[in-house]
Image 1 (cartoon, rainbow, N blue to C red):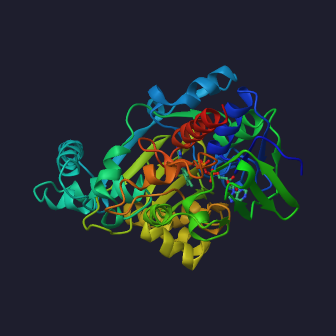
Image 2 (image 1 turned 45 degrees about the horizontal axis):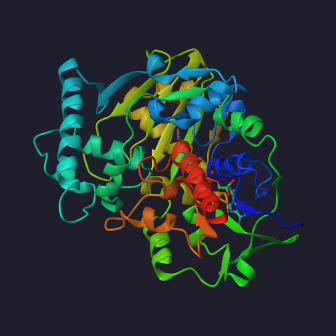
Amino acid sequence: MSDCDVVVIGAGLAGLGAARALRAAGRRVVVLEAATEIGGRARTAYPEATGGLWFDLGAIWLHTAERNPLVAIAEAEGARLIRADDLRSRQLFIGGRRASAAEAAEWDAARRRFAAVAETLAAGASDLPLTEVAKRLPEYPWAVTAETWESAVVCAVDARLLSLRDWRRNVLSGSDLMIEGGIGAFVARRLGAGLDIRRHTPATRIDWNGKGGRVKVTTPVGAIKAEAVVVTVSTGVLAAGALAFDPALPDDVGAAIAGLPMGLAIKVVLRATAPDRLDLPDHCSLVRRVERSGAPAMAFQCWPYGRDYVQGWVGGSAAWGLAAEGDKAVEAFALDQLRALFGGRVDRLFAGGARLVTRWDADPWVRGAYSYARPGSADARAALARPLGDGRLLFAGEACHDGMTGTLAGAWLSGERAAAEILAVLA
Ligand SMILES: Cc1cc2nc3c(=O)[nH]c(=O)nc-3n(C[C@H](O)[C@H](O)[C@H](O)COP(=O)(O)OP(=O)(O)OC[C@H]3O[C@@H](n4cnc5c(N)ncnc54)[C@H](O)[C@@H]3O)c2cc1C
């Protein structure tokens, strides 16, 4: 492989963001991607479970659209954006019954109170687990549901394992947009265009000891030398030791990786085989009151675009446990959760229908959904993003962004930031 100015490892959003910025500045960039496709955790499929309709296996929303750089890029590329907030409606359940209007108002009040208490605690002297918030709200029957939503559902980790301070820094606000046709398809089609991307080429080792002021990246098909390298693989891949570093990474960087493990979120799609729609409108979200911290709970979106499937989402230790048991266990859990709300109709409705279970834990190049910070590790993201080797080794990726971690936008911005740091050094 011929040498270049900068090697970027990984063609997910962070790698593509970095590579595009470096190329725009006139640098020769080679992107090494272990998988056969680019996009990383942005990947679109067309499964039988959705009747062949596009389905994003990983990311789907452009969160916080008002300050999401990908919105302008998508618009400039002519993508059609769907305003998810205009489509969604919500149905709340307590046990097997629908919540009343008064109970729904209690849910809204609990969420507001949860946010206010979290704000106060996050500003305190020590970094607590997120579970501390609901403990202070015993008078709010929906407080544990708010906790579950903010931890297992949004952050893909149980509240007891999640740094309150990190959670607070990365709360998403504003509107959510979707790209028609799928974000994965958009990324694959548009964002890699014009870049030198070597697919199916995993980096196995990085020599960054600065001999001759250059770095060397080894792959199974040869080595490549460059002025600098940007590493965008997930903290799951880093923790697994799949990528060797010579010299070894400094202790504080190792500690940062250990402090930012991967959470897991599983999507499951169940396709209906009967006309019953469970008396639910299209695009409707189901939220069931959670009575105990850490209790496994699946959130559902039903009949998107008027189609004949429902999509479940489970995160945290429940997801890891189900993943260990296999896809059938995930499907059975989804059906159980629906049965608790709609009874035996569910079995008739989904009998024999196509199904899909997403398994990011089983992807060796990702190993989970996205990173979370353990209590006490809220500053690990900044530690991981710190340039090493006189600015020739940089980490980027969703785990390195403080503000929009665990998102496409956070990954993209971290890639652009790494590119800017390298350009400053090379200049
Ligand atoms: C189920 C799920 C739902 C999500 N929903 C949303 C959402 O709605 N909105 C949102 O904004 N975000 C969402 N996210 C998060 C979002 O997908 C990620 O934050 C983002 O895609 C991460 O990008 P990245 O570039 O940091 O990492 P990745 O996408 O993981 O990219 C890293 C790349 O490195 C490659 N790689 C790994 N090891 C090597 C190696 N040794 N050599 C070469 N290449 C290697 C990988 O194959 C991968 O392509 C979701 C994620 C999941 C899993």
